[in-house]
Image (cartoon, rainbow, N blue to C red; front, side, top):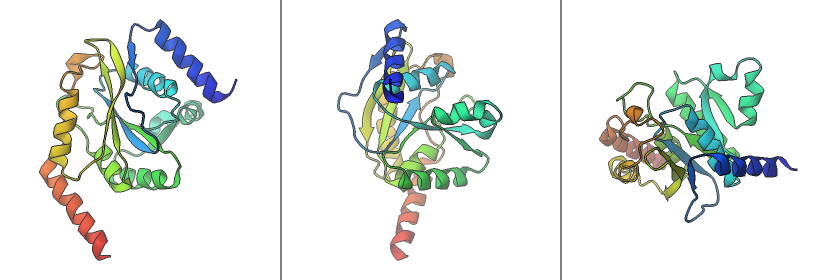
Length: 208
């Protein structure tokens, strides 16, 4: 049995035994992209993410703090698609991932953008990476109210951060997460400011 077929078999068993129901993509997307995982409210989200991706035949990458990759856990985390990052250096993380996306065929990155502090909103890294690398964004979800998890629509970002986030907010409005009390509203800090920043960066590239 190949590693791909083994992952698919594990996913089939998981969804057969799990009380959760899988929602597959209605229109599967080919090629590299960013997969948003939200609401991110529980460690169980990681298992759901793997089961969703393995069922779809995806070989995903995900970002994890460097401490998770120390010692014997390191090889396991990397085999599951983990990329160790220094989250204290946010701009460096974006640059590193964009570079990896551009040199990796079929790059699929799962990002959980919710901050670690309750009520802190979403981190903008997923948007910056997708915009800089020219990647679409697929909305993955877990909804505890219906015990459903899977992949929703795929969006092409416009650079108008507020408008794009309005579409994202509309999709997640009725998605509660595994532990609803930890759900965070999909809102970035200063969305208008990020729109201006991205536009200025685009104009700078044109001048260069």
